[in-house]
Structure formats: structure tokens, C-alpha cells
Amino acid sequence: MSLRQVKKYAAVFFGLASTTLAGHAFAVDGLVEQAAPAFELKSEGGGKPGATIKLSDYKGRIVLMNFWASWCGPCREEMPLLEDLYNKYKDQGLVVLGINVDSEVAQAMKFLDKEPVTFPILLDSESAVSEKYQVDAMPTTYIIDRDGTVKAHHRGYREGFMDKYDQEIQELLNPEPL
Image 1 (cartoon, rainbow, N blue to C red):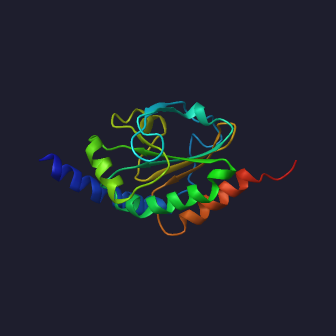
Image 2: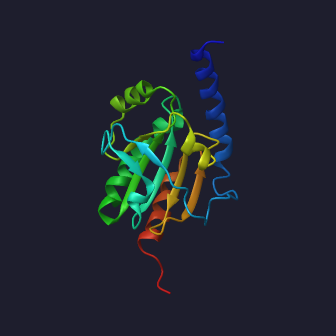
């Protein structure tokens, strides 16, 4: 089987898995309410191209991490909406990190030529960070609070998820007084 065929089958599989898992976005997750696993990745495209980015660089800010791939249909749909969310809240302390899992950087860059974004795009072609974050569907999104604690985990993407992300971000930006 050629690499092209494998990618084609993977796209179908992950698309179906994303659709199936989307209804279970709030399933019990071992990382929710835990410290977000530390990582360091190279940035390409978006903001800070060529830089090495560490999650710890963003302590004190709210981080939305989105794992995506160029062959993922729901990722294509979600990317411009993530850009909108980033632009809406970046001045209030939101950071969006797009973590690409393609094994070939050229595929990610081709995708970004068609869907440019201003937030950092990090490369996880070896899947080291994806494994730490138990990524099992594309896209997968995590929301991390200012203290570095994972507050939400969403598998897949479907209509209405942006509203959930928006609500979760607002709650972290404007916490209830004790």
C-alpha cells in the first residue's frame, strides 16, 4: 500500500472517528484537572515562525491547544474559526497553539498557504507531544488555565464546538469570585 493510500484511508478513518467521538467531547479524560504536560516544539507558519516554543512560556495566560493535520476535513473547517477566536481574545490573555501532526512539514505549509493564521503553528511530526496529550482523533483541542491546569478536552470537531470553546475561555478569563 502506498503512502498516499495510507493517508487517504487515515483521513476517512479519522474523519469518521472525529464525527463519532464528537458527541463525547466531555468524556472522562485523565488529563482534565491535571497539570498540562510540558513540551517544546519548533514553530512554523503563523506567529513566531522558526522559534522554539515551550508551553511554560505561556504560564499566566489561557492556552487553547489544537492538534490538527493537513488531511483532516474537520481541521480545515475549524482552522479559520480558531483564528477568529484567537483574534477575539488575544488581548485578554488567550494564546492559541496549532500543533500539526503531519509527518511531512511540506503538507502543513501547503495547508497554511490556503488557510493562513496568525497564531503559532508548532510541528509535532514525531508525535511526541500528541502521545503525551493522548490524541486519538483529529482535531483534538485542549484548554489550559493560567496556572497550567488542563480544564477542557475536546475530541473531533462539529458545529457548536466553537460556542463551547468560547464559553470555556470566557469562564477562565472571568472566573467567579470566591
